[in-house]
Image (cartoon, helix red, strand yellow):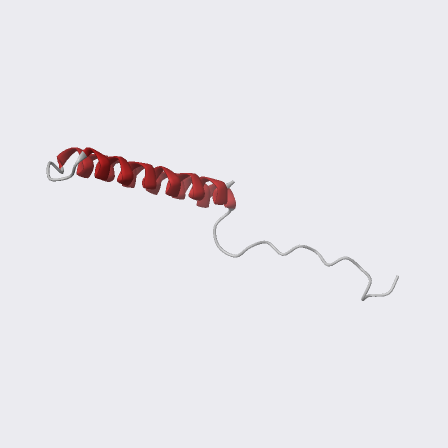
Length: 70
């Protein structure tokens, strides 16, 4: 078998393992979720529609991050 036809070994990604990176992302998401929830609850100047849009938008961000970390 020629050297150009040999399958190349997969390189390990630099930095942290995927599990550690995933846990870090989840921990950051939980902290941000708490901050956003406190902000939405404390923001009396926001109407119900604005609060709902903020929370729905944050859920979309969380789902996108969870997809990327899997």
